[in-house]
Image (cartoon, rainbow, N blue to C red; front, side, top):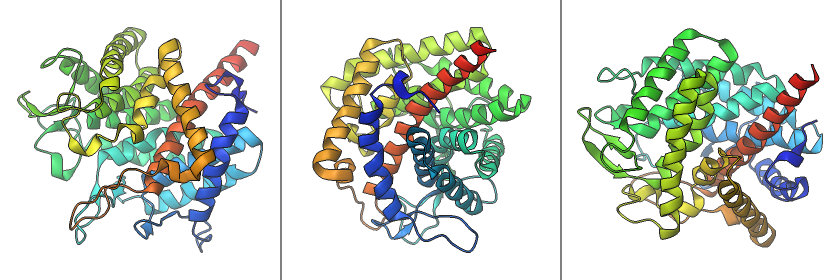
Length: 373
C-alpha cells in the first residue's frame, strides 16, 4: 500500500475529493459492453468520452484503489481496455471538442500528451497491458509527426502544421519519455533529446522568461505568450528529465524553474494580452496544468503551498456544490461542438490529482524499496 502521508494533503482530505469524483464518474459510465470493457459518456455532448479524458479517469480509479484498498483497479483496467479499442489505427487519439459539427474529430498531439502520465500509471499500478500498448502506440505515432522543418519539433495537428506549437512539442516528448521508461528504446531517447534541445533554445528569445505559444518555422512569433501553456510545458516537461542524462536533466530543470518564476510573477495579475494571448485559455481557475506545474517542484515551499491551497479550495467547493464546482465558464462557438464541459474539466482535474499523488507516492515507494535492498 502506498504511503500517502508524504503527499500534499492528508489522506482524509484527499478522500473527500476523490470519493465524490469517483461517484460522479460511476454515474457517467456506460454499462459494461460485449468486449468486457467500460466506456465513459460526456453528458454535455452526448458523445463517448475522448480517449484522453477516459484514461485520466482510469488513473483516478487506480488512485482510489491505492488510497482505499478497494477493487477499483479492475475498473481502471476495463476503462483502459476500451481506450485501446478506440485508439486510432495510427496510434493517435482524437478530440471531439471545439470542432465544426459536421467535421471529423481532430487528431491532436495534446490528446496524447495529456494521456501519457495516466497511461503509464494505470499500467504500473494495475498491470494493464492495454494501457502499455496504447502508450507505445502513441509513441510510435509521435515519431511519424516529427516536423520536416525542424527535427526537434512535433506537428501538433493537421491544422497546425504551418507553425511550431511549443507546448505540443513537449506533449510529444513526454509521451516518448514515458514509453522510453517502459522499453529503453534508444530511438525514443534520441528524439526526446532533440525536442528538449529545441525547446530550451526558444526560451526567452523574444521576451525574457517566456516561451511564445507558437512560432513560425523561421523563428518569428506566431501567437504570443500564454501563461496557461507555459505552465503546460513545465507540468509535462519535468517528468521528461527522468529519461535524460544527469547534465541535460539539470539544465532542463533549470530552464523550467526559470519559466515557473515567470508564471508565479504573472499569475496574481490575471490574464492580459501580454500574459495570455490565446483567448481560449484565459479561464485560469480551471487550467489545472497551472497547479500541476507548481507540483513539479516539491522542494519549493511557495510552490507546494500554492498546490495545497488549490486542493483545499476544491475540497471546500465539492463540499458545498459537489462536482459542479469544477464546471468551466460557458464557452461555445457557433457551429461547433462545445469547447469544453463539466465532464472534461472533471476528468482533467482527475488526471492532475492522480499525477501529483501517484508521482510523489510511487517515487517515495520506489526509493524506500531500493533502500531496503
